[in-house]
Length: 458
Image 1 (tube, rainbow, N blue to C red):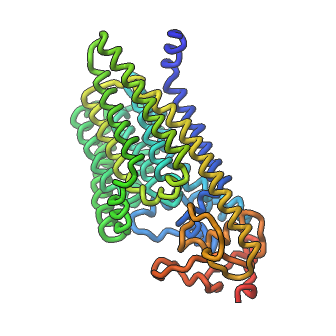
Image 2 (image 1 turned 30 degrees about the vertical axis):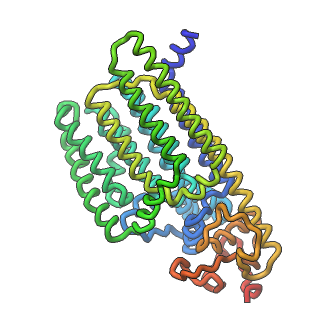
Image 3 (image 1 turned 90 degrees about the horizontal axis):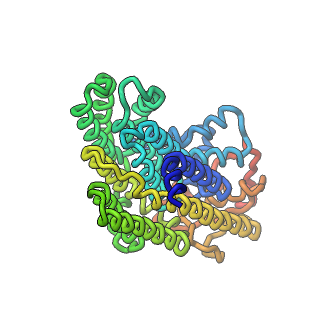
């Protein structure tokens, strides 16, 4: 048993990176197969892209993230792809892949600098990915998810990179500087953390760095912080964000999990600094049990309230600001104090990755069934009909994008002639992007082989 544990520790970093890679693949496949990209704003965003035949970015301060998210589908369009199912898959994968992609890059950089303590960050990055994915990742149109990935990579790069090494990572970090000022308004907080890490690193390790490169990163992050502040206060909507923060107190399952993770990390820090002896062995057992307890809390959420978590992923999106900033500060403390958690949180990371895959599969199957039901209801009606006329399960139902979701649900299930559409009438008309019972407002999809029979709606 001891030999197995030692061997596992030796290959722990590689195992976690491989597990992370598989988790990202599961996320992409589940999203594409389940049609998760149509949930809420995703249907509206995708419909606008298909109608325009090109990228659609209209929110100031987020164009960089939108560019990456729309990259696959716009490339597909430029290559002449007109199959709507292929384009939908490209849109879905492009919406969710970047968080995992950038965190995988950060993990690889950690593994490369394992001798400097980089390995300990891999497990924590896995935990961050899972928390973001499970609590906000079902809402694929949240561009802050992509921003979390960009921030995570830069955080690790600023902490561990060295002069004369990491040229591939150095090029990627340089490319990200182009996107940074317009990645997301959450960079008002992310860049503050990154600036702190940059400043500490420049003071402590000047001889290990290219000061010119670091100065450029420093200035770009200052500008990003300023530009993101303007976007957050003038351009991007914040009222719903504030409302979601106020309702967090009602989500006790989230506080239980978050509190247990914090206690686990504090116990792991204590374990890492106390000398060898009986107390250290006791702390080792405590940390292991706390890691398992974190997995139990998350497992309960995945098995008991997974669909509820998915449906509120939009209102939980502010955690994409709070969690990455907290993780960044924790990383900085570990690095400054030269603490090495070693394999303390490894059990939690492994459990979380497994549960993330289970969650993605479960909610994707549920959402796929929801889209199938929408398609079936459209077969029963002709023209416009209201959701109130049906017995549709409203778990995943959003009002204002429902008309586009209804059309696209039919398209991805093989319909080429659309003669019915489900709509949702709001008392507050400002939430509707257009008059939902005006068929002329939907735009033409003929280029994709989809004919909207407008006569059936008159």
